[in-house]
Length: 232
Image 1 (cartoon, rainbow, N blue to C red):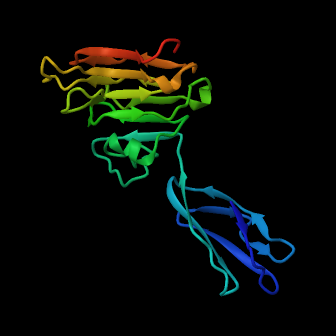
Image 2 (image 1 turned 120 degrees about the horizontal axis):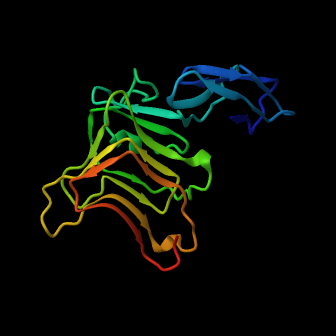
Image 3 (image 1 turned 90 degrees about the horizontal axis):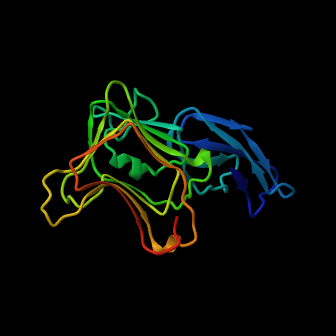
């Protein structure tokens, strides 16, 4: 983070960066003056979650505009006994619902671990435009604990359990993906829906993997839909 002053105060201004999340600033203080209008400090969080970055100073005329920032994890855990107000970063602090994944925001390179045997209700949609060509961008949905977790939806039954739009780099592993099962004959439900719209013309989407998954109770298990010729 870079801290700047635009109207230098007489003498040196000592700035102390602050964060609402536990962590360490390096350096702990910055000295700004007419000769040094800006300086950079690095924040190393000791916990995951949202944080507000600000600063205090040795001059009452100094004011800092707070910045909201997220400290992402490479692993997120979900359990029926968890809480969406937790940070989701460990098995001791799991999220409770799959909706919290999108509420927090998908994290590229992260693995989302669903507790085996638990049921998670709610459609998941990923539409960040990442092609999936880089291994570092892979998003994995998998299990932890014993057994396979259930990912499902309720009405409307035309909603896919997992849907990706114009993006790749996705792995679904060791999950039970189950449809609503009570759809009318006129309703189409594709449980896993990989959608490539006309805006993705000329783009190659890569690395979509489904491994060790049980897929049931829908009209179709998997659909890859393209809206224009030439998409791959």
